[in-house]
Image (cartoon, rainbow, N blue to C red; front, side, top):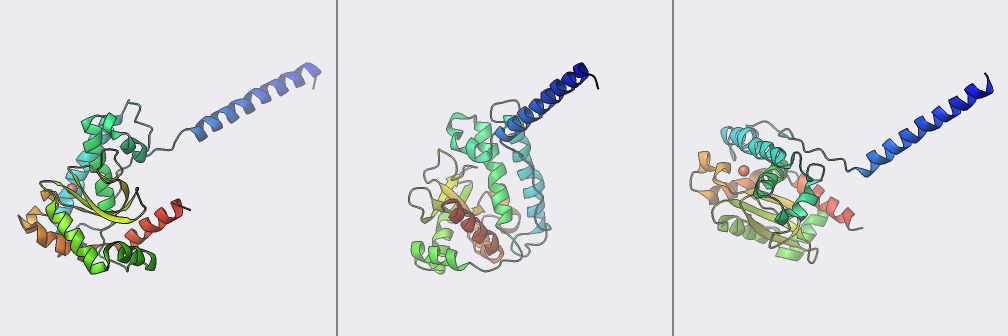
Length: 238
Ligand SMILES: [Fe+2]
């Protein structure tokens, strides 16, 4: 190989390597954001007789899907497009009503579907301890959660969270599609368990009897998932 050819080869190799490095570093700097519409983790009829198949199908494939589609529409082409949900929620007071309502509707239902299951599992030792510390007993916790869920005026959600203020478990409620990751929430924290008390979640089977729906909910709570969320929170604090 002539000297001049060798020089050209070296220059070209350097250019290629520099570009690869630059592209990789760009890719590493960019948050990986994938706002996907996740599959329901069980069949529509799996939660019967507590939550009926028709309600599940409409709730997931129509209501939840609409929140998701409208959320994607609301963020597409804006600076929020490549942000993670947590970041969007932490500044939601400055975002449009569509981002708040549709983003909340998208996220809240994902949490809700995952904390339901025909296989309920058992509460972990750590979570049971935290529940006892905050509420006295599991029964007291359930009673307080039921009261909070029943007291939501109109449409909204009740939550078991780890409070951002003191790292203790708390029960709280949010109106409409708000959640406890939003900067506008009166009580902020990490969601562990939630119940959707919008009428669309129960009206076909329970009509105006929201309390019956809330009682039935406990038969299909996926404690394995709730334990996992609590463990993840614990790990994030270490
Ligand atoms: Fe809902």
